Image 1 (cartoon, rainbow, N blue to C red):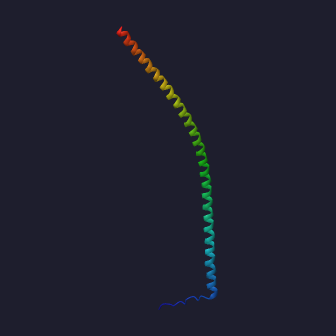
Image 2 (cartoon, rainbow, N blue to C red):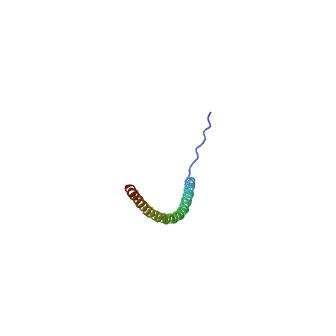
Image 3 (cartoon, rainbow, N blue to C red):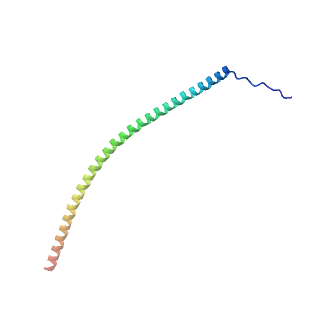
Length: 107
C-alpha cells in the first residue's frame, strides 16, 4: 500500500520567507546585471578612446601623405614642362635639319 505523505503547510511566515528569498534573488540578479552593463560600457569607452587615438594618428599620416603627394605633383608638373620644352626644341632641330638637307640636295 502506498504511503501518503502529508503536503507541507504554507503558513504566512513561510510564504513571507519565500517571498523575501525570491526578492533577494532578484535584487542580486539586478545588481549583477547592472555591474555587467557598467563593465561593458567601460570596455566600450576604452575601445572608443583607442579608436579616437588611432583616428588621430591616421589623420596625421593622411596630412603627411597629402603634403608628399602635393610635392610629387609639383615635381611632375615641372618634369612635364621640361619635357614639353625639350620636345619642342627637338622638333625645331629636326625641321631645321630637314630644311638644310633639302636645301643641300636641291643645290
